[in-house]
Image (cartoon, rainbow, N blue to C red):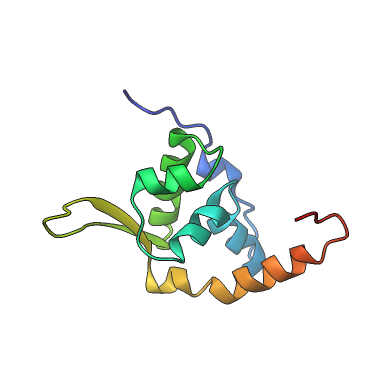
Length: 116
């Protein structure tokens, strides 16, 4: 079964020289930050990501992983035997987003509309 592309990454770019706009080009798609959040805890299999990201479809997860991989944020590798399964993990550059992620989460938690 071939997965159908839901969004065209090329059509979702800001085409702006601003670093913040480029950052959104890289991680601004829906679910992308949550995929990154899950990968901050270490390498994960596709099925584990799907299970822990409640509500994401396999199609969208595949697209986000492909986009993050194409951007150099995520890498995919096969674990050695006996596991021999494919996992996704953040690249060293991908891990550099952690402080930004923590600040964003702290800022959002202070929102007057946040209801944990």
